[in-house]
Length: 476
Image (cartoon, rainbow, N blue to C red; front, side, top):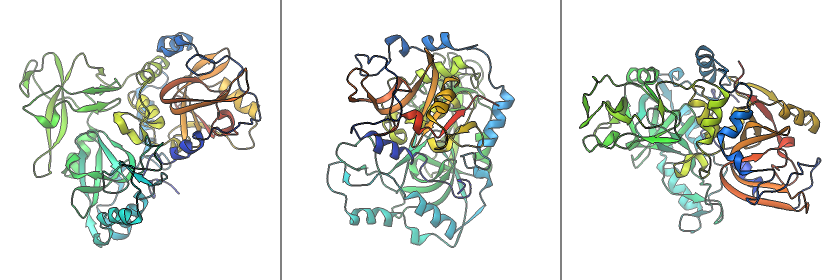
């Protein structure tokens, strides 16, 4: 079913499948032999230290500074991302009046989670009575027959949740990196349609461009549809190009003080005269930007804030070049894996989407949709495609192409001796030791550089043979 007809509440659900298969370390039998290059001391095969710098890959890239898509083409792809099968939901297209059946369906869908809730943060068993209590807080029985859609903007980086609760629930003691109720993230300035609230009135049930979820009320400022969507439509004054930057500290305006801004967040320029003070500090050495804030009554207002000129930002989206794709992706190197943007970090599809967002492209927030979005050029693979055909496709893959396997996505960064290499946010590297032919399982749990061909996606299948899509993001 189209996500635009019935959006998925959890943009990162399919990645749970990845976690399940990567947890296995049984004996591997593959239908084709992986690369026989030696294993490095770090436990990664076919790897050398110089591969950990973007310069190594930029020097190998053909025409690294050539613009692959111009601004008009990027804008067209952004629009397609909100169209049929594009993977993102156009909130302006939702009806002004929401029905009980519609909202109740969203609430039920939001409760779906692939990670079983077995224990809580203290290691205590999660009972059905505990889960029923969380579901009661969703107050589905109090959804009115019809309700007017309300609109808001997120005022800080805030988590999306499957149920209206901050409880952290896990499938097991040794899988605490993957939390059951985590459903994604909103960054400052993202629009929502408010459809319902929790029984304790601490949570709002919202429809986002990613799908429906619960979010803490304190993190959403409510305003008119015009105020919300006109802010979103403003041209970017500064675009965050670092992995994460913060606004300047200011006690005069706590709502915009040291606000966390992730890669690709675009903020409109504030109309401030050169040198004019902003929140108690001169603006001459900083960039003035405009941000949404939440008033005491929950209403939406806007306030100027400062970004230091030394912060990693740009006056607009970066040109879409191979060099920029590599520079941007390597800014996340070594960052801890963060399921659904936990730990102030991101996961596999969060990595790929934020890299491209800094260049103006919007990718769907889950790996499965990235592999088939109508906004992107891709080649799909089925069981009919042979191992040799898949390898040939990867040999011709370009910097920035995405390799999608069930529940996971990786980005091509180049080739060494004809073999494709990727950057990926991944729990483990699983492969056969070329000397002993024994299975090795190296825990990475971070953004990593690895070869592609030697790695396994599960206990019997190489990544290359599990590939469902090769996404040519940078092609028109």
